[in-house]
Image 1 (spheres, rainbow, N blue to C red):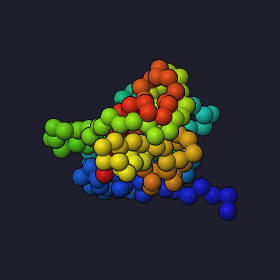
Image 2 (tube, one colour):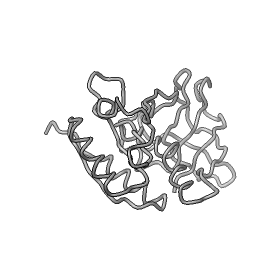
Image 3 (cartoon, rainbow, N blue to C red):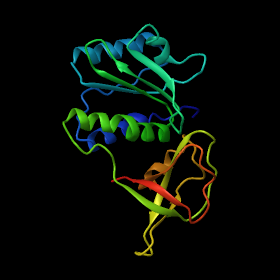
Image 4 (cartoon, rainbow, N blue to C red):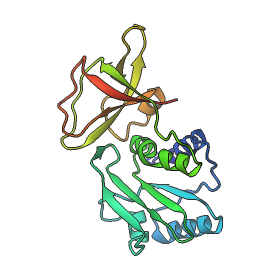
Length: 210
């Protein structure tokens, strides 16, 4: 009681496997910069190609990843104009591994992986097709969009009418903490920054998931 279940490692391991990459080390560390750096040293010793972390990269007073890597010139922390997944980190660690520092909220992790990490993993494998297939589908219901940020909404593709597929959000909203929505989603609706609120019938770009 009172604890937060650690689900992001399981989520990321599944996403990595889906991208035909291999998980070599999987670790959880507490809110201790020294422990995080120790985990990175283990990763360096294993000669990994990519290191992915979740959490500790936002704008709070005590963000473990940001504190631990604050003196690392090759790792950059940015606020990206997207929802969810606004706080991000990216760079190169000692030893040459690419580093992706993703936000801590589960939907933000999933979206960030699809947008940033998966294309990089496929590129490292020499793939030519790096992006998920995208369809143009109509919204079955409407929702609010954030100003000045690209929005990724977990949706379900409704295939009742084979002549006209539509999409409907699977959660109560686009919140980045609603992990249960991921299990019911088979796509992300992508709404560009500056777009008006989504109304029923609006055509949307929909990133299809396996």
